[in-house]
Image (cartoon, rainbow over all chains, first blue to last red; front, side, top):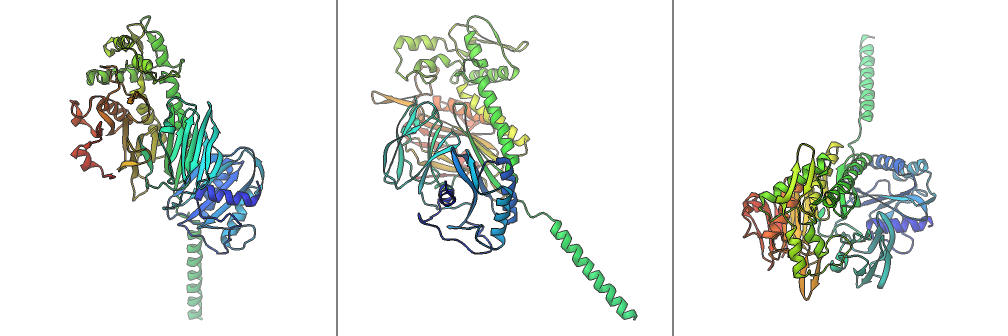
Length: 225
Length: 343
């Protein structure tokens, strides 16, 4: 994965930010907008990276509101890197001057970024983004992101290999659903179609989770069922 | 000369104060960021989600690790799906010999028996043969049982025929074929244990969700409690209600997760131990309680008997969605929680 692809993918996976498919515009400002921010780090040094991320968040003075932290694994070879998206703009720390790019440069230097790594972990720290549009479907097997699809895609009977068999995914008209799964209770099939950010379909036996990226549309922290 | 010296001293003092203040200020830590850390694992036959508020991601992750480890340990001990669990060993010894188990297993079996007595058999921890017959456990197909098979399985259900020996922590199922099933209590207990572990490890504000059963501890922030959405039992992906939760557990028993339509009729996994058939009084029952174990047991019991048959209904806060879809909850519940219903 090239650096530019990483930047585009990470921004889209985590934030659902409205980034253009072409090269995103770059921000030259000094400070960051602490209300709409997404920091991603793809690394093969998880323990060190978290300490570095915490330190970076403190130095960026992002202490005014709670920040969501999440992580997942990727398989295969990827380019490790650090990405800060402010609003819908990427701060290109490599080519910019100023306080924020400088802080990012220091963190990147300590973590020896960018460089190719195998089976990395992706860390994500973000502010809440209420009202984010549903744009992507992220597919996880266990805690590993195995596929990322645009919700605008038209996809029929797409097989997702799971722990016990497979889960058959359909994406149509901005909605994702499971038409079949190698499991007994077929709960993920019965859950019907999902289309709102934060909604997910889970097949427990196959450990497959199909999630619409973004902040929960209902504004809830968790779902009782 | 004297005046100049005084002025010099004043300036020096001012500079010293400024320098001191500057170094003091720079030595002060900036306010620490607050992270909402999330993690999930597949445990207890479901997906378990932890979400915690903490200043240190690593400390929170470490606490989560210990919490997940605890749940995995309990799964090994209490699952009737695993042939090597203590519950399976008890079941394998049914009608043959008492089985010595760890004190913790003994204690939860004893509590389950006590609940069974308390609810007069409407909740029965020896429901294993019925669950197996219907095929809701294990790999077999879910199917409508034959009348004789149902009668035989019902015959093997009876919490009064479990002999507990406190002196040597042995459990004996008195008749061959009897089976314990902790499905109505073990998940709740595991949530409570994980909640204790998180607190012991310094995470005080968190929410645990294990397959829809929840424990919420503390608050999300100083200004905001945890907000829980309640799944609509007949509209997948839609909410029935939202409510705020703090230092409390919520458990739901519903007919919409594990079920199968046979000849146009819905057959689900919550079996009435008196009839051997899925209870059809409710679509869902949600219980609000101090512990997840209590919420888990009560939700199962109330789902089976229904609001109007429940003799002990006033002891607990519960929200019922009846078989016809009527929503009913106590005024006490409405006073205690901000419950917003969706249209």
